[in-house]
Image (cartoon, rainbow, N blue to C red; front, side, top):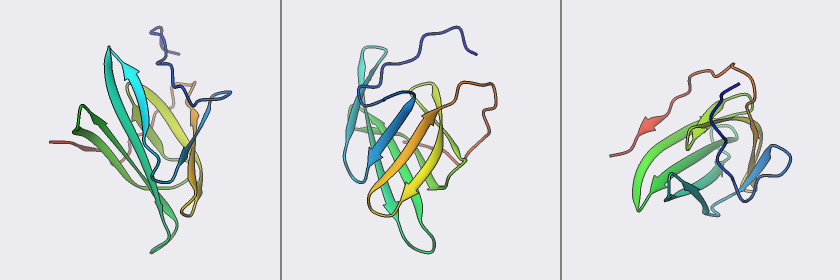
Length: 108
């Protein structure tokens, strides 16, 4: 487990964070505001997307998310546990060293 303190996510409860479809979440990290927005799609199969930005600029995008995928948000690893079409995407905090690579794309 990492020695550095975890970021405080205002909507996290018991290590889980339910990201509602198209609802923006603001997270403070290193004295800067970061925006996190999730979307859930039904075609070709149910999958999610998370976009992370800072001060209006994109930082990362994770697409084609399904349960088991790992994403990094402000330096913390989260595992996708549930993707519910047009409703929500549920994350749980990764507490072990098992951080698998995902298809994150850097922002401009």
